[in-house]
Image (cartoon, rainbow, N blue to C red; front, side, top):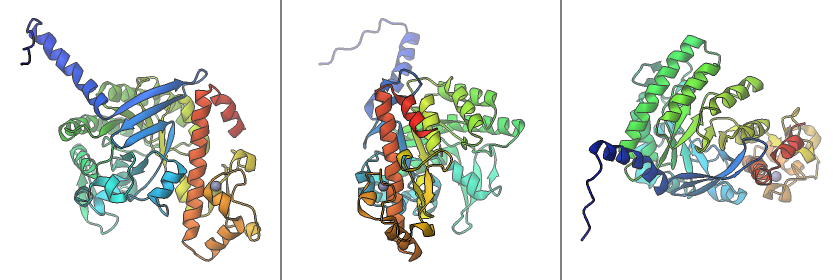
Length: 406
Ligand SMILES: [Zn+2]
C-alpha cells in the first residue's frame, strides 16, 4: 500500500514546487545537454546533447538535408563520415511530401533511414526568404505561396509546432519572423515583438503536443543588427522555458558586426543551455563562434558549393582565409592532375580518386561528381569540428585557431 503524502506544507508552497519540478522532469527524460569540458582561455566548450535517437558531440556542424536528404549522399555515407545529426527543412517537407505522409511512414528517421538525431527548423526562414516580399504577415501568422505550384498556405506558431511534431525530429525550433539584417530599428523592433509573442505561442503549443517528451524545443533570439534588441531578445527568450537557444538572422557579414551581436546576446543566455547558430558555416565563422560558446551550426555551404565544383582545402594543402579554404576543381589546370582533392585529407574520396577523374566527371555531367565532392566537403567539415573538440579538451583551442586563421 502506498503511504499517502503528508499535507503539512502550505498550499501555495506546494503549487510552486510542482511548477518547478516540471522542467526538470522534462530535461531528464529524453533530452539533456551536458558540458563535458570548459576550455580555460575562451568560452568554447565541449558537450553532449542527448536525444531519443542518440547523442551529438558538440561543438558540431549539422549538415542540411533540405528535403530529407543530404543531396547526393546516402545516410550510410553520412554515418561513415561520422556525423551525429542532420537538419531538415520544415517548409519544404510540409509542401512535399507533407507532414501526414512522413508521420504515417514512421516520422523522419524511419522515412529517410537516418536513425540518429534530426533537427527541423521552424519553416520561418524559407517562408520569408523564398517568398521575397510576397508573403503576408500579420500578428497571428503568415500566409505564403508555394514555390512548387503557387498554392496558398498559412503558417502560425501552432501550425509550425504541429508540422514539426508530425515530422518527428528530436530537436525543433520555435516559429519566428526572419528579417533582413538591413531592416531599420522600428521595423526590427516591431518584428521582434511579434517573434517574442510567437515564441510564447510556440512553447505553449509545444507543451500540449509533446506529451511523450520525445522532442526538445529551441527558442530563437532575433533583433536584427541592433545590440539593444539582441539583448532584449536574449533576455526574453532565456526566461521562457525552452530546452535550448537558437540565434537567428546572423548572416556572418560584416564579420565583426555579426560577431559583436552574437557575443552581446550570449551574455544574457544561461551558460548551461545549448546554443545553435542558424545558417552559419564558413570555416572562419566556426572558429569565431565556437570561441564564444556556440555548440551547433547548420549551413548549406559545404554541400551547395560541392555541387558547383568548390572543394574545401586544409591549411596544410593551401587553404587560407584569403581563398576561403577552397578551390575550384573544374579548372583546366586539373585536367591531368593525378593528386587527390586534398592530399592531407583522409576521407574515402581523397584516398581513392584523383583530381583529374573528378574534373572529368564534372565535364561529362556524371552524377558521381556530386557524390564525391559532397562527401569530401562534408568530411572536411567533420574533421575541422573533430579537431576543434579535441583542442577544447586539451585547452588549446587558440593555437588551433591560429593554425587555421592567419
Ligand atoms: Zn577528402
